[in-house]
Amino acid sequence: MRALRLLPLFLALAAPAARGQGGERCAPDSDLAYVCDAQKPEDVLAIPGTPWLVASGFAPGAGLKLVDTRNRTLARWFTGEPAQIAADRQDFAQCPGPLDPALFNARGLSLRAAGRDRWRLLVVNHGGRETIEAFDVATDGAKPRLTWRGCLPMPRGQVGNSVAAFADGTVLVTVLTRPGTTIADFVEGRPTGAVWQWRPGDSAFAQLAGTELPGNNGLEVDPDQRHFYVVAFGWHAVVMFDRSDTRVPLARIEAPDFMPDNIHWTGGRLLLAGMQLDEPACGGLRKVVDGVADPMLCHRGWVVGEVDRTHRRIATVAYGRPQPNFNGLSAAAIVGRELWLGSFQSARIGIVPMPEPSDTPASGP
Image 1 (cartoon, one colour):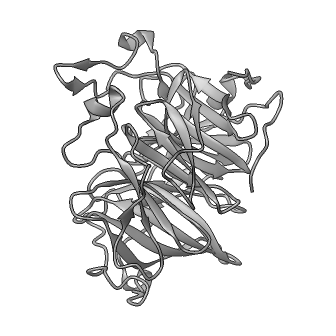
Image 2 (cartoon, rainbow, N blue to C red):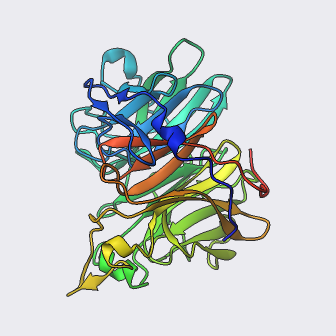
């Protein structure tokens, strides 16, 4: 992998201790500064052109958080108050009703422009129902406004992981493990999941042929609107597909030293983030013992990479050592000159200065 020049990590220590919604103070450690009380921020997205960040909450009732990156604070965003609900029963005819914020368990996120100062936010939800929840976001005020519009139910027995959308409204969702498969299966390289598609006017999601991979995880669409990228967690790789014919992948791009989780365009770069693959502090590679995969509770180092689409390789953007207060890196977003890091295990969002690249691969929007 191509080496990139890292900024001194001590810069993270210069940041003031941040507060979460409960007022909890959390001091930085040797590598990262933090915003606490984030309740498993499995995915994070920067709202382009603003200082705001959206974080999911991968736990019952954790919902969505809106993060002010200027003062490093966060607050619960979707509360279910009447002003936040405006159901679109035409586009989301199959949705059973409004989302219950007390159950809202948010995982993967997708944000797509819908006009000037307008965005469509899609969220994988496990709370009370397996759905893709749709929100409108307005950024023309002092603070972004959120409005729930409807949901797309997942097929029976299928649990969504990540979500992405094309400009024509087509929605893609990854399923990590279909019924009858396990985490151990994809750790050992066996296909367990797939990509499912919904198009405007469809009554339900349909599985895309040829997208069955070992642990279908992160998901992103290409700016050309013709291709999409899927993280195969069991392969530690990004797989590229042509949406017009998904039966045979176009490319498989390996990430040799870490386990990519989520993948997103951020700051014009296609970034992916995950835990160190071979971590000496945890006994090396992830193991399967008696048919059960290591849950990776041992704290591993973290890596953020960038997909170089031209040369079909992954370059290292930033990395760090195992930290006592942060584990399970799963997503990265660029805000200004900082990287904001999500986690499927921790109760905090990590922050590190953005390294200066020695060279920059071809970028997207």
